[in-house]
Length: 51
Image (tube, rainbow, N blue to C red; front, side, top):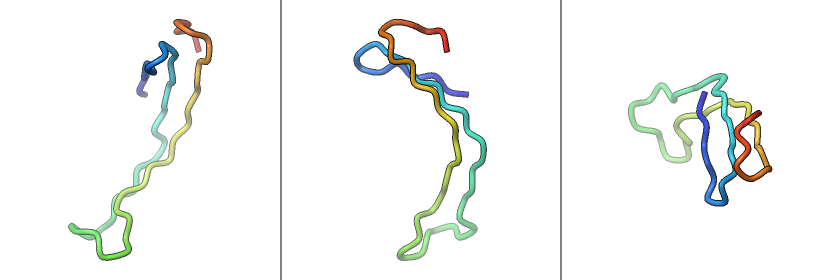
C-alpha cells in the first residue's frame, strides 16, 4: 500500500492488486510494457489523514 500527499496537502492511498510485466525483455514496437491493477482512495479534506 502506498500513501501520497498532494501538493495542496491532501492525501491519496493506493493499493496495488496486480502487476503484469511483458514477457519480452524489450517491449516490441506498439507494446506498452507493464500494467498495474489498483484501487485508490482520495481524501479531499486538507490535512485529514484518516481514510
